[in-house]
Image (cartoon, rainbow, N blue to C red):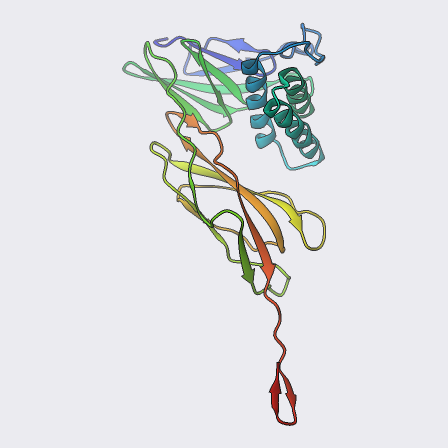
Length: 282
């Protein structure tokens, strides 16, 4: 093929695509995990470079994002949160260990299947991930992680293109407090999120995560993929929320998430007018 592209499934599978469609199968035995020495276990590494820990975090983030919203995913999110905290405090071995735990929760040892398409147009090669767990595309020693449905375009003899820049949230301003009249179901809205355009991006992935709610259990995060630069949220319970937006480009892949912003939803106080002898009293 015209560009030196290696595709690596996270479960230890490596192939060089040589046809328009490549389907890879793992052997039935449990695959070796990163830093596991081929045993399938995830022992805590005595030391880890920042880049190794960062790559593990990126892979685990993508696995969590692609997972169904169930108990296993929520447990993986907790492990990933611990990994992020360790990384911020420069405890890279601990970050790697927790990121591996999150990944392993969502990827129990089993035979895996993934499908990619490799297309050529002159001196350009486009790799599109069609099925299965996220894969890593490598060209000229640079890597890019692709989730299902994503693609990356590589010019012959060049490294992978830089990912798009992170979007800049516009509205609402950080920590804005909305006071709204509740619906018959006690939910609040509408609230519209907006962000600045990112060059090369064709869609944006938005995630709204509840941090606290006034009543009832904490609801699940709300996610949407849009071609526009704003999103009118569904009605939500009163509480505090944070949101991020990620840019996705057909040729550059996915950006890092934007800086998180927060907002609060509060129910408008009900005003009662009581008729008394001399008029109305509020």
